[in-house]
Amino acid sequence: MKDADVSRQIQQMIRFIRQEAEEKANEISVAAEEEFNIEKLQILEAEKKKIKQDYERKAKQIDVRRKIEYSTQLNASRIKVLQAQDDAVNSMKDAARTALSDISNDKKVYRKLVKDMMIQGLLRLREPSVLIRCRESDRKLVESLVEEAKKEYSEKASVQAPKITLDDRVYLPPPPKNNAATDSLEPFCSGGIVLASEDGKIVLENTLDARLDVIFRQKLPEAYKEDAVSWSLNTTCCSLKLKIK
Image (cartoon, rainbow, N blue to C red; front, side, top):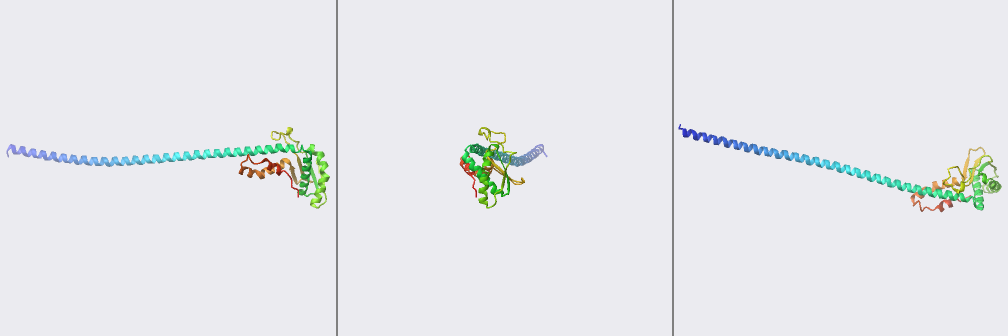
């Protein structure tokens, strides 16, 4: 074979090998790019999912914080409202207690009130022998009313008049100084009496202060249901009037 033929064949083989190499390289490049695109898409989707999850987590945290803040503010507002209601009710009670201190200054009104309290207490106790305790300043007044109270009680209850004894050893606390009932730190009594059975097992506290406490316990729901400030003090004062049956 001539050298020219050999050279031509070698060149053909080189071209063939080069073409195969280029085709193989192109296949590898295409496959590599496809693999890259697939991996890139997977990484992108994974990052998207991660970002979405992170966003949802942060959104939930913000929502929880917002709810906590709202609940905290709501509770604080409720506490303020309740505190304002308590202050208003306590203010009314203090005003009523101060007004009670003036009742005993009206001799005519206070005389009738104490007598009615004595009759009411006797009707509730229905004891043959009763001990009455009062303020030392009211002793003479109570002594002067004993016979009247016994007579009216006997007529109303249709029973024999009971034996009434005034406690001359222990007295109820004195009235508040200068009528400052709300500022007094010492025990005080705005007026009224305490009745007890002879053996002391039954005690009926029928003082103005005790009646005020009972009235406020009864009227408290009404005071909170309505505007506590506009709740009339007259309701309290009127409720102090006794109904003797």
